[in-house]
Length: 148
Length: 332
Image 1 (tube, rainbow over the protein chains, first blue to last red):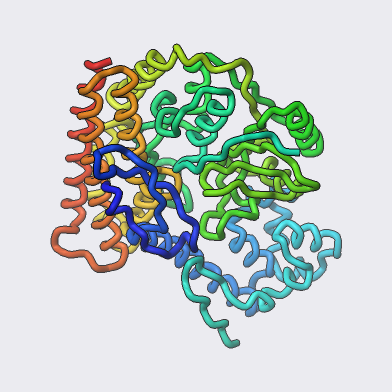
Image 2 (image 1 turned 90 degrees about the vertical axis):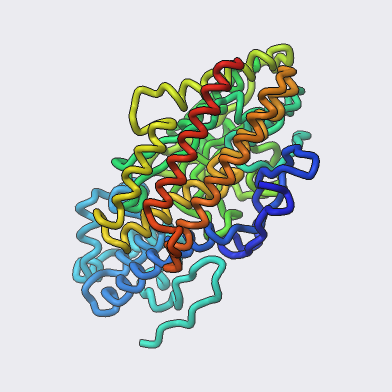
């Protein structure tokens, strides 16, 4: 790659400039700042859209009362049962139970707070995913919140 | 409290930390040199390891290998410690800083608040150097950022004790001894030898240039085997691995070409400079593959962007890299 061809396609990096290695006019390698590259933007959006679709599904499930809010927040924090079990110290089967709305409703405050803190939320935000009005895709315009 | 430490932005966190630490101890070393001496270049397609349900492809050697190998080759040692208890881990960090020692940390990127959202995921092998403390905030040289950053102790502690695969367990490391500049030529030679072995002689058909051909064969069959949609996700993951932040472009091929150029000067060996140019061309070819794959992901594939056409590019890269590393091994 030549220095003058270092791509500056803004997108997913949101202003962060990363270092690329490129050859200057004298044929020497130099470090060049790049704002991003279109193929990379495309494939990153692809990954975020996957996450976004999954979250939209889960949000609907939670609103319909088929899953507890924990299911949504777990996915939003890119965690699976194994990782969440490690962070909370709960067993996987305990977390699995917490995914059921019926069990979730009976959870005590300290436990809810533990989850909320891990997800960097207040307990109120944790209990009601509707307070999180959108699932953001980095580097793209904010989607308008879904109307119930 | 702040140690005088020169922060230099680099493409890759591990080679960046290696170069910056060695430079601090008087051996002015570029990131590309640290990467080359550490034999960072590699290739492997690991379809049985899944990340977000998609197969893993790597363009570099095993994490931690660059740090360890380069330090050793330059004649110093890396003292490393892990901790069970976060407060003990943070106290040990403070103690080292108070002694004026810049400290390298292995961290989980998810918990670092200064990371842009797009790069925050549960990746536990992110390296950085702490070189000061201002109140309850640490002063950090994070090699992938252009300027030093500040981070609250509570956040840094979470990052050091992140959970999941390859959990850092608070790992911190620092240099013992001083680098020996006279070792540079032999360090460069040995780094090249190690890379040649890994690329040509790894006894696994999924690694090195053989691994590239293995990927090409598999990739050709993706649409039939997985269906168009899933095949596109596989392609997307491959491009992200190749071009994601930290490779310097073309899956570390450009950064290794930069190393070969410097190595030519260190060893007074013109043939290395020529091979650097060859590797730049190979890197450009990898980028061409990325462009075509991305067109597929966007649903804008033209006739030149078919899966067999993309597989052909990877095979050409494999042939050219095989020739290149064979010639390299004859030179050193």
